[in-house]
Length: 508
Image (cartoon, rainbow, N blue to C red; front, top):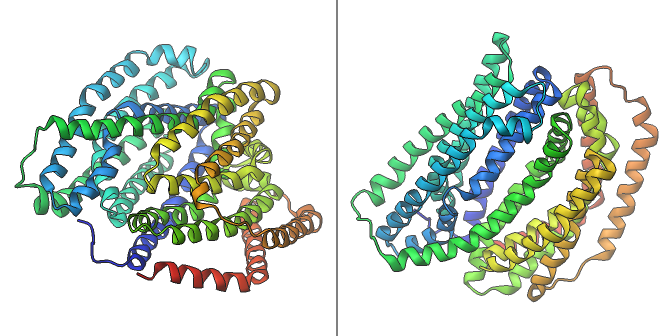
């Protein structure tokens, strides 16, 4: 299952290739879908649809007491030991654990959907539509659990290709059904909610076929399941810590969305969900780079190679500061234009919301680096403690205060302000891997980026009008190209050093 004879460099190249390939394919598909929905549905309907999706993702934390995700830790260990009986047993435990919990949550959600539509989503003019969509997504919740098991196997065995192919199949299915409803002229909130179900059916079918052919027939078909209390206790005790971490992480990722729908209503939620779509554009590029840390940090830690982990952290810190500042500056300048291009005139306010938080994105970038290192040096308890402090002390209080003071803009500011203290805590947890920050490199780039953005804002932005979405898109892409090339040339010497350092790390 695992390619045990691959060098670190080979693992890196194979996984990074598939991560980037599908990030650049799947990401745009997702935005095409949302562009169509933003055109066909009202601001309130967009808010209801994506806030129901948010609620469902929030509930998935509890569907199996997080035994499924604990498999990410145990399955690679069983593969290295060639103990496929334990491998199959762990999968069986996770499946059995999720049946009662997921059915209970489904029952609770289904029979309270009418109450939630009125009293939680405050959908005064869209009550029947909200009730209908909630019941549709009850199906999504149940069937999503079936997929999680197989996806975990792909992830634990570092099979990025299978994992990303299945995601690609899902997105293509959703796009096809979305285009069908759009072309047929039957674009309603109810119909578009079904596209998620159709996409999930294709996702599950494709994933299970791959799992059966490549894993079950070869490794698991003829081994027996062990009903061992000690084994179950070992997996379950680890899962409890993962549950605590996942619980707070999921709440953090969704709390602002749920507070907005409850305190401000569907219209504010609609603006906010498209704001989130804009601010996560840079992560299409950055996230695969961060995912690179998974196999690399884990392997270096298993060989007790602390120096190389320090070098990786130092390299990522040095260049992510600059990348985040450059991206933040240009997105701030063209925030409303980007919202207009992606989501039409009615969502320009989503670009205004972006201005309140974009410059804090750097702390999220660096926090992701720290958290990946903590995860793969097996210090999950530190992550749990940090996340709970973040949630209780910073995130929720800031949201409650700033939403009341500043409306929906306050929530965007609150979430990203809360990244700062959590970034500090994650740095403190990694003091063993202390690095020296290159202030000279940072300040030199900061000055260059400020100058570039002021020049664009004063000389180019005044001539940028909202006349044509296509012309605006071409114009922004040309500016992006000029901007990136300029910064790349400015740091050409440093870029060569970066490539040399990566090559050193990847040598076995």
